[in-house]
Image (cartoon, rainbow over the protein chains, first blue to last red):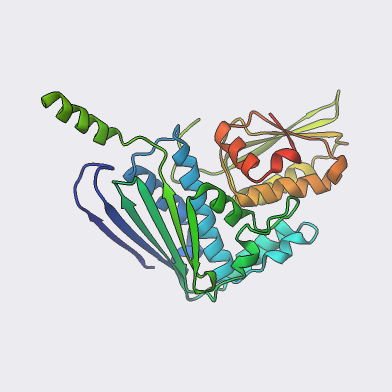
Length: 195
Length: 110
């Protein structure tokens, strides 16, 4: 099994410096685990987010929906149209499981880039699949009763901006954190008092 | 609310009230695709005549798009526009997701 991690921190002070983290999950990891849960915990910890902060659940939701989208519509190429059949949601996840069990190749890559100045997190996710009909499922054509397209619709609603590349197999999300940068303001107060 | 643990799972349990034929489904933990079968069994195998469904999210930590699909599937099962489904004890963050996806117009959310 291969999980690649690549961290680079400028300083050890949380949220006052820029950082970048990359993660890559191959087919074996994706099949055996749901690695996004640990990934989300790592990112929340790096950003010092606690559960009472709005950004906590928003980021959990964004990362989770992006990951599921990459696996479902990228790696195992499921069509969300199945979800419209009676009990389609259940058929969909049954088929997802079967295809994941049979998966031997492919990977999902994450790149997180944090800009402290703007308190902006840029998330890039790229999968080795052929892409998907992102025009259809990006949320622009969202229908109230629809069983499909809700994942990316939520991402669109929560993020500042969403960009699609390579037929949807690469997605970039810009998200400005809603927390205050605690360390930074303490630091500035200290400086102010010294003057 | 407890903090999400690394390996937190979801627990689905039910209560049935004879007086108003209400089936209450409690979702504890992460309400995501891993709850699929337990959630479906909770109403399809209820073994009672159900007039009203109550989804209790008091101990839910999180809800994803597949959970929204499950709720819509229950809504169809319960009679679509004629269904009576109430979502109670909804944590504010989860409420926001339901509002964002406009599902607040299809369910009675408290």
